Length: 371
Ligand code: COA
Image (cartoon, rainbow, N blue to C red; front, top):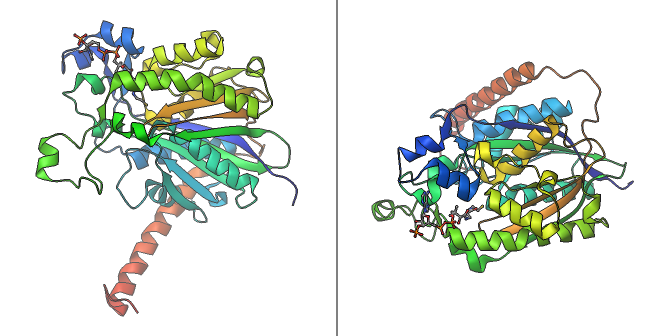
């Protein structure tokens, strides 16, 4: 088999319509627009409506990415949804997305690496393509962290927003696409940013709820120090692993947590801020969705073009951090866009039909009995 490279050929995003401004937050907790802008660079964030969830945002972003790549859902072999706010503990959000978009031949799973998740997921999909086991992959970062935020805690509620972004990755023998990656973890800092309850260590009880342990807890200063330490180094490592120099990079797309963290990364890399994609002002910290959201906007603004070298770099709970160097590709296919609406109708019918089949199989063969 000829060597295969993992190219990014489609990208898409989805954010809720509802916007929450800093002034809105000032009516909810003891804060103000000036403090939030000054300390974080955030002006507003998008918040999911009651009928929007991590899977619905992920599905919409995925369909937009597939439309861009002109790849129908039936040709996707692998779906990875990176998220810290999954639809349920299980089934995976990725399985729900697989069903909704009609990716009938795809294996689907969730990846949990907090805000670094999109970097880790991109690397996993890219390695699956490089090994020859997968041809077309969908990588999605999706969050509705607004559902896990304590809206009375000014230390955290000002930071987070909801949204989703997705990439289509495709195999091709032409060199390019994902050139290098690094992934790191340090679980000794796990307590610095966590949702303590709801898992096996502290199952949900009245007590955990009364204590607010189902909300995001964060030591902001420590996370800030960690982030400013790792961003520049991770980028440098990924760049040198791709046999490139910092000067070869056209644009850096960092995790959008705080403008001051991005400025520290720029200083560490001795690069001007105009080399960085920044949209934290509009979306806040959307965790694992922030890198694809910033990428989609960078492409739309003409800042990322075919052949450009880009570094994606992120950090987050775990602690985790990582970076990728990518040579940007764009859609392979020049064919007419496929009829997405028809796919969607078929996907809904297929899903409905399978539920009906399961229902009747249950009646005929006995519900709840195996063998
Ligand atoms: N509005 C107004 N004042 C606030 C406030 C708010 N929303 N939040 C905290 N303050 C106050 C504090 O109480 C403190 O007051 P004090 O000096 O009287 O005690 C003061 O502002 C400074 O607090 P501090 O926590 O030192 O602020 P900071 O400069 O570290 O900024 C963060 C706080 C959270 C913005 C910053 O630490 C940060 O961004 N950390 C990283 C968080 C992150 O990225 N998390 C996600 C990782 S993926």
